Image 1: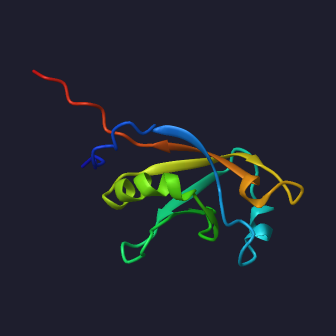
Image 2 (image 1 turned 90 degrees about the vertical axis):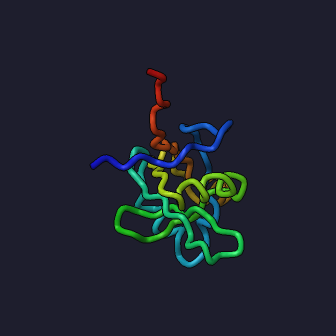
Image 3 (image 1 turned 30 degrees about the vertical axis):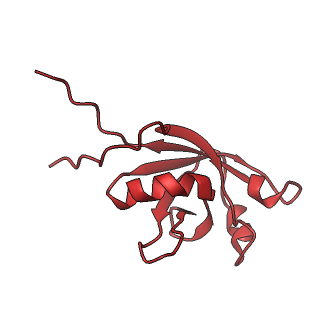
Length: 119
């Protein structure tokens, strides 16, 4: 049985690039050192009990390395919480010589159901 994702938010790109925020808290900068361009990363939406839910970026092993910007989470979180699936891949990984919010650049690809065709 194939799972069909919920309708994608109108006017939003199903494929986009994003920086990752919060990479310097709770020892995440050390985890970031293990990420290389091309690595697949997981996107995990916060549970709905959060006041302002975010979409977190995790290593394949499960450790969080940061979160997507609030402007993206505002529309991506509801879609993912409703069953939408988004994949992430590291495009650029930089060190402590750049601002923390620019250290990890992702490409995010949302699995969008094809539009239904009329008979």
